[in-house]
Picture 1 (cartoon, rainbow over the protein chains, first blue to last red):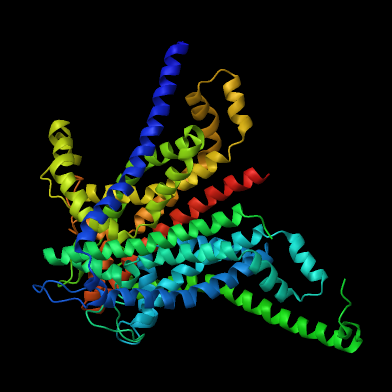
Picture 2 (picture 1 turned 120 degrees about the vertical axis):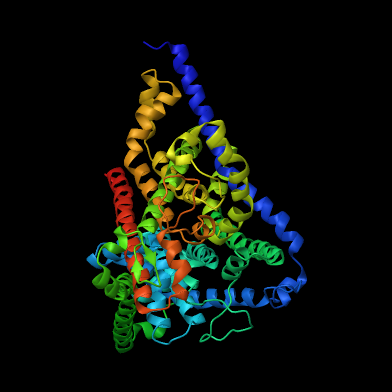
Length: 282
Length: 324
């Protein structure tokens, strides 16, 4: 029989271990962020945002084309992913238990878990292989396909929070069903849906694997949808695995810019929902 | 109170409005249904696309794609066994490291954390999921690998004498299965801890109070009353983390060393299915090579599909039993 004393000792030790786990789990993030700040800030300059990449051996240069390329790719992905995702979310919230709804719910979760490189292969098969060359459009479609299931599920979740009485009130006033959905239900849940959209954008902004054989990357200035396009994550990858110190410095600067974009979007998303729950509904 | 608009009382116009709104309701319904149909269509076309493209390789090489370890592009041999092995081992290493940490954090946040720490710690752990994998890879190359090579690997091999076992023998190269496993552990951690935290929070208070009332210490309460209640949800979270780790591409490609050999030692470089595809796809020279890479994609697709489906089912079963 264990004594009460030893049982309390074990209990205290185990609780201590959970504190240790919390410290160890937050450590990598802090290490990565401080290292990025130290290495990235020293290589970051105005030229990084305004200049093109230079060939090996020439110091300086920037990633202007990659930054613009990433914005173009996010744009294409949002044009595809947001409307379809929000539409599908509306369907799920309104037709809760049709067979289509349950399979859409399950398949979005499956799609969310698919390796992003598999999505890249899919976009390559349909948009690169038949055409014969890489393109910004293929990259955007790959990223957009990743956004659809994310936006679908968050939209549904946010719409379910809207009280039924609100919908009933609108219908009782003679609003058609579609206007009730769009201008009452969707509008009430807007903050939450925007949050979901931001989270989705933050997630795809840093994706590299689906772009490897779709957008491909480009050393030159291009914003054409039919040409290969540069992207920040691709550029970071190529520079990081290169043997040149100058390119490593650029990779750190690029990573700092990328993570700043992603973190600002993530934190903005967090605050958008908080104010939704904090402020009284008017 | 304002008077009703005159035209509301006009019977003909009202009927017209009703008809119009019935038609626009129909259009609205069609549109949202079409959007919903995109999701299954996407899954089907992804499956069809990669199965169709992989078919020539399966027809020509059969199962030797996953059983043979001879990957020789020039000679037309495509055996990806080292990549399958590397995917499974690096993910296993990741889970061994991440699971206790993630569950520890989840227990800390749901049971013991001071209220003021709960939000910030939870937020910092969640943020790990927001960091792009290429940034993990960059940090891994320049910070994690030197750290492992100079300190951790010699410590494991020589100080702890684990070098005598096959798992930690041989020279410490740096890029290795261990490096990939550690980075995957960091990347899988937020997924496991988020799900675990949620299911732990959902355990009823009465469950805890009953255990304490019976004289359990706080740890015994967690071990005997809380964790059993949340078990299948936690396992679901671990499976979700596993799904992430299996399919992760960039960080692993940058850290694992990309050598298609099977080695028992975690200090040796290896390969994974995702990094094999990432490295060779855009340089594939002939159709069979391309098709073989697609076949590797099919294997990865099937494995992650099964892992994710089981994970979702486990998490859902907890949610359902809670609702009842």
